[in-house]
Image (cartoon, rainbow, N blue to C red; front, side, top):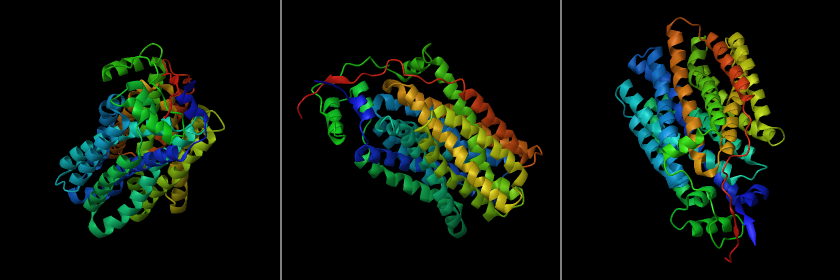
Length: 447
């Protein structure tokens, strides 16, 4: 008897083990949300202690994103060689240590370097967790599962913001970094105990005891066990070979469009998430109201990531995603007109957070389905990494514009145009069945 394991995962109803894997990926993504917003929420306190100008604050906001970009580009691809799970464990250790050391920084330069170091781990985690969430979801719920995984960012940012307010008022900004490091390291046992290795990776790369590991996973998924591993196409042997495959004639157009989409969306997204608390204060709101606005952005994001996933289960993801991009642009324009009012600013902040976070969640759901298992972590990692370059540039550009005399709220109109451009680029993308997909048709053995 022959079965196709991947087809069975795609077509069968979800079992608890699959939802558990996705749940752990949500927790992993919460670390990203907290890590990005920890600098945004502590920026005012750090700036006051060290007398920093706008460009210097922008550099601090970008430093962590620079590390995340490097982690996505150069660390995440190793997951296609050594496995998603070992890489996540390594990166959790890296980012946890970086967070703890950040609390002891004595200068802005030291903090920036440690933010970059922390970002290396976060960048590696994101690509692998996103791939695992995609691979363990069935076809019907894949878009929703990856989008729900993306809600982890908003959850982490929301809880991080609320905790930051409490910690800042009692213990100062260093306590926020100490808390973040402790939580990051505390996630390691969770991954060790319950996060499964990617089934696609085990079949494609065949590590030591691959057949036994596949059969253990098959049992947990209520699938038949295998007598032998399936025949697969030879996977690229090195990170360079995998990158070459991403840029092969068959995949080049899709890869370049994915990269451009990630760059544009993260360019706009990280401006909104990083600068809003401080810009609201500059527009006349109190420091507490500015932080509240930042928290509401993240609260909206919790619903936005879930909403785009639910809509994508009924309509094409690309169509839903383009709509979210255009609505985001419209809301940012409205924000330039009404942010001086506390009520309007907070209400618009909630809606902007919903749709902007939905844009990122949609891209995370879209990117894994265009690559096969042998290069999937590399493909997603490079997409996120290119996006992080946009994220790096974004806060720094905003800081330079402010130092150049721009009015704070006018910047939102500029970044609205970025989301319009992203929607136009999305129209050019036509994701199809990945070339050279791994076949998993094998004979069934006895357990």
